[in-house]
Length: 299
Image 1: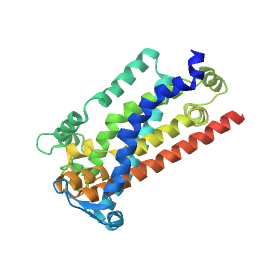
Image 2 (image 1 turned 90 degrees about the vertical axis):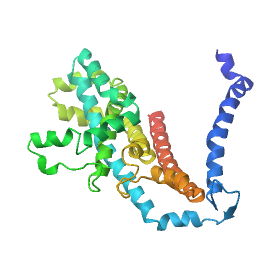
Image 3 (image 1 turned 90 degrees about the horizontal axis):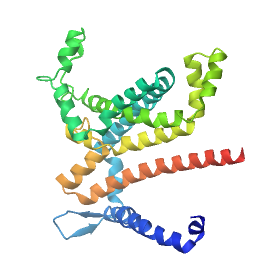
Image 4 (image 1 turned 45 degrees about the vertical axis):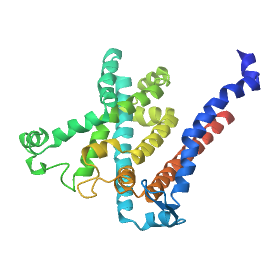
Protein backbone atom coordinates (compact mmCIF):
# COMPACT_ATOMS: atom_id res chain seq x y z
CA UNK A 1 0.00 0.00 0.00
CA UNK A 2 2.87 2.38 0.88
CA UNK A 3 4.50 1.62 -2.50
CA UNK A 4 1.35 2.66 -4.32
CA UNK A 5 1.28 6.02 -2.53
CA UNK A 6 4.92 6.65 -3.54
CA UNK A 7 4.28 5.89 -7.23
CA UNK A 8 3.52 9.30 -8.78
CA UNK A 9 2.15 7.77 -11.99
CA UNK A 10 -0.48 5.80 -10.10
CA UNK A 11 -1.36 8.85 -8.01
CA UNK A 12 -1.69 10.90 -11.20
CA UNK A 13 -3.87 8.19 -12.74
CA UNK A 14 -6.35 8.38 -9.87
CA UNK A 15 -6.16 12.18 -9.57
CA UNK A 16 -6.88 13.12 -13.19
CA UNK A 17 -10.54 11.93 -13.28
CA UNK A 18 -11.35 13.83 -10.09
CA UNK A 19 -9.57 16.96 -11.33
CA UNK A 20 -11.34 16.70 -14.72
CA UNK A 21 -14.70 16.36 -12.98
CA UNK A 22 -14.07 19.43 -10.80
CA UNK A 23 -12.74 21.42 -13.76
CA UNK A 24 -15.74 20.50 -15.94
CA UNK A 25 -18.53 21.06 -13.41
CA UNK A 26 -17.08 23.77 -11.13
CA UNK A 27 -14.22 25.75 -12.69
CA UNK A 28 -15.58 25.92 -16.25
CA UNK A 29 -19.14 27.06 -15.23
CA UNK A 30 -17.64 29.66 -12.86
CA UNK A 31 -15.44 31.11 -15.60
CA UNK A 32 -18.27 31.07 -18.15
CA UNK A 33 -20.60 32.72 -15.63
CA UNK A 34 -18.21 35.65 -15.29
CA UNK A 35 -17.94 35.79 -19.11
CA UNK A 36 -21.75 35.86 -19.52
CA UNK A 37 -22.02 38.67 -16.94
CA UNK A 38 -20.24 40.91 -19.44
CA UNK A 39 -23.18 40.71 -21.88
CA UNK A 40 -26.82 41.72 -22.04
CA UNK A 41 -28.66 38.66 -23.34
CA UNK A 42 -31.81 36.54 -23.06
CA UNK A 43 -32.11 32.77 -23.09
CA UNK A 44 -34.44 32.75 -26.12
CA UNK A 45 -32.30 35.07 -28.24
CA UNK A 46 -29.03 34.37 -30.05
CA UNK A 47 -28.00 38.03 -29.77
CA UNK A 48 -25.58 38.90 -27.00
CA UNK A 49 -24.61 42.55 -26.57
CA UNK A 50 -21.27 43.19 -24.91
CA UNK A 51 -21.75 45.69 -22.05
CA UNK A 52 -18.46 45.23 -20.20
CA UNK A 53 -18.71 45.67 -16.44
CA UNK A 54 -21.98 47.64 -16.55
CA UNK A 55 -23.92 44.70 -15.07
CA UNK A 56 -21.47 44.55 -12.19
CA UNK A 57 -21.66 48.33 -11.67
CA UNK A 58 -25.46 48.15 -11.82
CA UNK A 59 -25.41 45.74 -8.86
CA UNK A 60 -24.01 48.39 -6.54
CA UNK A 61 -26.72 50.90 -7.49
CA UNK A 62 -29.59 48.40 -7.28
CA UNK A 63 -31.63 48.87 -4.08
CA UNK A 64 -33.14 45.37 -4.45
CA UNK A 65 -29.67 43.82 -4.44
CA UNK A 66 -28.77 45.70 -1.27
CA UNK A 67 -32.07 44.62 0.32
CA UNK A 68 -31.33 40.99 -0.58
CA UNK A 69 -27.76 41.33 0.71
CA UNK A 70 -29.04 42.82 4.00
CA UNK A 71 -31.44 39.88 4.37
CA UNK A 72 -28.55 37.45 3.82
CA UNK A 73 -26.54 39.27 6.49
CA UNK A 74 -29.55 39.11 8.86
CA UNK A 75 -29.82 35.39 8.07
CA UNK A 76 -26.14 34.94 8.94
CA UNK A 77 -26.45 36.85 12.24
CA UNK A 78 -29.46 34.83 13.39
CA UNK A 79 -27.76 31.60 12.29
CA UNK A 80 -24.63 32.43 14.28
CA UNK A 81 -26.67 33.16 17.40
CA UNK A 82 -29.14 30.27 17.24
CA UNK A 83 -27.30 27.57 15.30
CA UNK A 84 -23.67 28.09 16.33
CA UNK A 85 -24.04 29.52 19.86
CA UNK A 86 -27.21 27.56 20.64
CA UNK A 87 -25.82 24.38 19.10
CA UNK A 88 -22.57 24.71 21.05
CA UNK A 89 -24.37 25.16 24.38
CA UNK A 90 -26.74 22.27 23.68
CA UNK A 91 -23.91 19.97 22.58
CA UNK A 92 -21.95 20.90 25.74
CA UNK A 93 -24.92 20.18 28.02
CA UNK A 94 -25.82 16.93 26.27
CA UNK A 95 -22.20 15.75 26.26
CA UNK A 96 -21.51 16.48 29.93
CA UNK A 97 -24.77 16.29 31.85
CA UNK A 98 -26.94 13.62 30.19
CA UNK A 99 -26.55 9.88 30.43
CA UNK A 100 -25.16 8.22 27.31
CA UNK A 101 -28.50 6.68 26.37
CA UNK A 102 -30.49 9.91 26.81
CA UNK A 103 -27.74 11.89 25.05
CA UNK A 104 -28.02 9.66 21.96
CA UNK A 105 -31.82 9.96 22.05
CA UNK A 106 -31.61 13.77 22.33
CA UNK A 107 -29.21 14.02 19.39
CA UNK A 108 -31.49 11.87 17.21
CA UNK A 109 -34.56 13.97 18.09
CA UNK A 110 -32.68 17.21 17.36
CA UNK A 111 -31.24 15.86 14.10
CA UNK A 112 -34.52 14.59 12.59
CA UNK A 113 -35.60 17.98 11.07
CA UNK A 114 -32.26 18.21 9.21
CA UNK A 115 -33.01 15.09 7.15
CA UNK A 116 -36.56 16.12 6.19
CA UNK A 117 -37.06 17.69 2.77
CA UNK A 118 -36.79 21.48 2.84
CA UNK A 119 -39.91 21.68 0.68
CA UNK A 120 -41.87 19.58 3.19
CA UNK A 121 -40.54 21.68 6.06
CA UNK A 122 -41.50 24.88 4.27
CA UNK A 123 -45.03 23.69 3.55
CA UNK A 124 -45.42 22.48 7.15
CA UNK A 125 -44.42 25.86 8.58
CA UNK A 126 -46.60 27.73 6.10
CA UNK A 127 -49.54 25.90 7.68
CA UNK A 128 -48.27 26.56 11.22
CA UNK A 129 -47.81 30.29 10.48
CA UNK A 130 -51.16 30.60 8.68
CA UNK A 131 -53.45 33.17 10.38
CA UNK A 132 -56.54 31.13 9.40
CA UNK A 133 -55.63 27.43 9.91
CA UNK A 134 -52.28 27.58 11.73
CA UNK A 135 -51.96 26.86 15.44
CA UNK A 136 -49.21 29.40 16.27
CA UNK A 137 -51.56 32.37 16.71
CA UNK A 138 -54.13 30.43 18.81
CA UNK A 139 -51.24 29.13 20.94
CA UNK A 140 -49.96 32.68 21.53
CA UNK A 141 -53.46 33.84 22.53
CA UNK A 142 -53.73 30.86 24.88
CA UNK A 143 -50.58 31.89 26.78
CA UNK A 144 -51.53 35.57 26.89
CA UNK A 145 -49.38 36.77 23.97
CA UNK A 146 -52.25 37.45 21.59
CA UNK A 147 -51.00 41.00 21.01
CA UNK A 148 -48.11 39.69 18.87
CA UNK A 149 -50.26 37.30 16.79
CA UNK A 150 -50.11 38.26 13.13
CA UNK A 151 -49.95 36.98 9.57
CA UNK A 152 -46.33 35.92 10.04
CA UNK A 153 -45.44 35.37 6.39
CA UNK A 154 -47.74 38.05 4.99
CA UNK A 155 -46.48 40.84 7.23
CA UNK A 156 -43.39 42.65 5.93
CA UNK A 157 -42.19 43.27 9.49
CA UNK A 158 -42.21 39.60 10.50
CA UNK A 159 -41.83 37.58 7.27
CA UNK A 160 -38.02 37.49 7.13
CA UNK A 161 -37.58 36.53 10.76
CA UNK A 162 -40.34 33.91 10.47
CA UNK A 163 -38.50 32.26 7.57
CA UNK A 164 -35.15 32.50 9.36
CA UNK A 165 -36.48 30.83 12.51
CA UNK A 166 -37.61 27.82 10.48
CA UNK A 167 -34.03 27.32 9.31
CA UNK A 168 -32.73 27.65 12.87
CA UNK A 169 -35.15 24.95 14.04
CA UNK A 170 -34.26 22.68 11.12
CA UNK A 171 -30.46 22.90 11.31
CA UNK A 172 -29.86 23.28 15.05
CA UNK A 173 -29.57 19.50 15.45
CA UNK A 174 -27.03 19.27 12.62
CA UNK A 175 -24.87 21.85 14.36
CA UNK A 176 -25.17 19.94 17.63
CA UNK A 177 -23.88 16.84 15.86
CA UNK A 178 -20.90 18.75 14.40
CA UNK A 179 -19.98 20.13 17.82
CA UNK A 180 -20.43 16.71 19.39
CA UNK A 181 -17.71 15.34 17.10
CA UNK A 182 -15.31 17.96 18.48
CA UNK A 183 -16.40 17.55 22.10
CA UNK A 184 -15.88 13.80 22.02
CA UNK A 185 -12.19 14.40 21.27
CA UNK A 186 -11.78 16.34 24.53
CA UNK A 187 -10.48 13.99 27.26
CA UNK A 188 -13.04 13.41 30.00
CA UNK A 189 -10.23 13.63 32.56
CA UNK A 190 -9.98 17.39 31.99
CA UNK A 191 -13.63 17.86 32.92
CA UNK A 192 -13.25 15.54 35.92
CA UNK A 193 -10.24 17.56 37.15
CA UNK A 194 -12.16 20.82 36.76
CA UNK A 195 -15.00 19.44 38.91
CA UNK A 196 -12.51 18.41 41.58
CA UNK A 197 -11.12 21.96 41.52
CA UNK A 198 -14.63 23.32 42.05
CA UNK A 199 -15.34 24.74 38.57
CA UNK A 200 -19.02 25.24 37.82
CA UNK A 201 -20.76 24.60 34.50
CA UNK A 202 -20.25 28.12 33.12
CA UNK A 203 -16.54 28.15 33.99
CA UNK A 204 -16.14 24.71 32.42
CA UNK A 205 -17.86 25.91 29.27
CA UNK A 206 -15.76 29.06 28.81
CA UNK A 207 -12.39 27.80 30.07
CA UNK A 208 -12.35 24.21 28.77
CA UNK A 209 -14.97 23.54 26.11
CA UNK A 210 -14.48 26.64 23.95
CA UNK A 211 -10.62 26.65 23.96
CA UNK A 212 -10.45 22.90 23.31
CA UNK A 213 -12.69 22.96 20.23
CA UNK A 214 -12.01 26.45 18.85
CA UNK A 215 -10.99 25.06 15.42
CA UNK A 216 -14.28 23.18 15.30
CA UNK A 217 -16.15 26.37 16.26
CA UNK A 218 -14.35 28.36 13.57
CA UNK A 219 -15.20 25.77 10.92
CA UNK A 220 -18.88 25.76 11.92
CA UNK A 221 -19.00 29.57 11.93
CA UNK A 222 -17.65 29.65 8.38
CA UNK A 223 -19.99 26.91 7.16
CA UNK A 224 -22.95 28.73 8.72
CA UNK A 225 -22.11 32.10 7.18
CA UNK A 226 -21.56 30.60 3.73
CA UNK A 227 -24.84 28.68 4.08
CA UNK A 228 -26.64 31.91 5.01
CA UNK A 229 -25.51 33.49 1.73
CA UNK A 230 -26.45 30.39 -0.29
CA UNK A 231 -29.95 30.03 1.19
CA UNK A 232 -32.67 29.59 -1.42
CA UNK A 233 -35.08 26.68 -0.96
CA UNK A 234 -36.84 27.62 2.27
CA UNK A 235 -37.25 31.25 1.24
CA UNK A 236 -38.57 30.35 -2.21
CA UNK A 237 -40.98 27.70 -0.89
CA UNK A 238 -42.42 29.84 1.91
CA UNK A 239 -42.55 33.35 0.46
CA UNK A 240 -40.83 33.46 -2.95
CA UNK A 241 -39.10 36.58 -1.67
CA UNK A 242 -42.33 38.39 -0.69
CA UNK A 243 -44.34 40.12 0.51
CA UNK A 244 -42.93 42.77 -1.81
CA UNK A 245 -39.19 42.25 -1.43
CA UNK A 246 -39.30 41.69 2.33
CA UNK A 247 -37.72 38.23 2.25
CA UNK A 248 -35.67 38.57 -0.91
CA UNK A 249 -32.20 37.04 -0.69
CA UNK A 250 -29.47 37.00 -3.32
CA UNK A 251 -30.23 33.45 -4.48
CA UNK A 252 -33.97 34.09 -5.00
CA UNK A 253 -33.17 37.37 -6.73
CA UNK A 254 -30.74 35.53 -9.00
CA UNK A 255 -33.38 32.91 -9.86
CA UNK A 256 -36.12 35.47 -10.58
CA UNK A 257 -33.82 37.70 -12.63
CA UNK A 258 -32.63 34.80 -14.75
CA UNK A 259 -35.63 32.51 -15.13
CA UNK A 260 -38.62 34.82 -14.69
CA UNK A 261 -37.35 38.11 -16.13
CA UNK A 262 -34.97 36.43 -18.58
CA UNK A 263 -32.17 38.93 -17.88
CA UNK A 264 -29.41 36.35 -18.06
CA UNK A 265 -26.51 38.80 -18.13
CA UNK A 266 -27.66 40.57 -14.95
CA UNK A 267 -28.44 37.22 -13.30
CA UNK A 268 -24.88 36.14 -14.10
CA UNK A 269 -23.60 39.33 -12.44
CA UNK A 270 -25.59 38.50 -9.28
CA UNK A 271 -24.10 35.02 -9.40
CA UNK A 272 -20.61 36.55 -9.64
CA UNK A 273 -21.37 38.59 -6.51
CA UNK A 274 -22.43 35.43 -4.66
CA UNK A 275 -19.32 33.63 -5.88
CA UNK A 276 -17.04 36.44 -4.67
CA UNK A 277 -18.67 36.53 -1.22
CA UNK A 278 -18.44 32.76 -0.67
CA UNK A 279 -14.94 32.63 -2.19
CA UNK A 280 -13.65 35.31 0.19
CA UNK A 281 -15.23 33.53 3.16
CA UNK A 282 -13.57 30.29 2.07
CA UNK A 283 -10.18 32.02 1.75
CA UNK A 284 -10.55 33.45 5.26
CA UNK A 285 -11.38 29.97 6.55
CA UNK A 286 -8.42 28.35 4.77
CA UNK A 287 -5.95 31.02 5.92
CA UNK A 288 -7.17 30.79 9.49
CA UNK A 289 -6.87 27.03 9.52
CA UNK A 290 -3.45 27.27 7.92
CA UNK A 291 -2.30 29.56 10.72
CA UNK A 292 -3.70 27.17 13.32
CA UNK A 293 -2.00 24.25 11.61
CA UNK A 294 1.38 26.02 11.58
CA UNK A 295 0.98 27.00 15.22
CA UNK A 296 0.27 23.35 16.05
CA UNK A 297 3.41 22.19 14.20
CA UNK A 298 5.63 24.75 15.93
CA UNK A 299 4.42 23.54 19.28
